[in-house]
Amino acid sequence: FRSMLNNSLNGARDYADWLGIDPDRIQTLYNGFVFDELRARADPTLSGKIRGQLGAGREDVVIGGVMRCSFEKRPDLWTDAVIALAECDPRIRGLLVGEGPMRAELQARVEAQDLAGRIQFVGRQTPIEPWMRAMDILFLSSVTEGLPNVLIEAQALGVAVATMRVGGAPETVRENETAL
Image 1: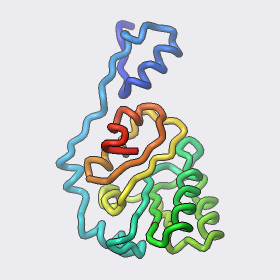
Image 2 (image 1 turned 30 degrees about the vertical axis):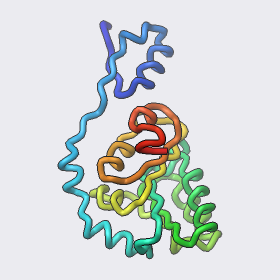
Image 3 (image 1 turned 60 degrees about the horizontal axis):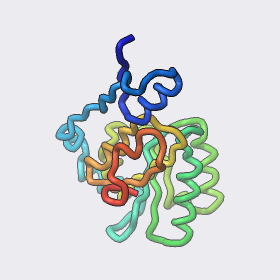
């Protein structure tokens, strides 16, 4: 083969190492987005209703997550972080959008801490944009990633992001400027 494509620099380096080839043979082509359409789907009225369902007022902080509830996304880390913050500050609310094999276990953990009214797992949602816009910050807790579209989408909607330094995640943000 003459060259390959990957959607992140980190992914390209990983493939080059794995295949034992010159990294210059793998080009990076980032994912494309139509930001106007993404923003058009982010109905602010629906986002306000979602915040209301969480019991989140103007002074409250909604820490969100959009992920599959499975090992590689570390939803247990997301859950533990939101529980710890909620126990320290009554203004904290949690909103996790996504399905997966760990969801029931995580919900039980939240219920055991008597925080089910403040930390909610709402499953898969379509369109996702109103749910993301209802968040004050989106925390991506993954142990591994390619190029996480969710970080790009959240920032396009004006939602602050916090992420782990994994895979292509650092390529989607400017550390300490657009994200932590």
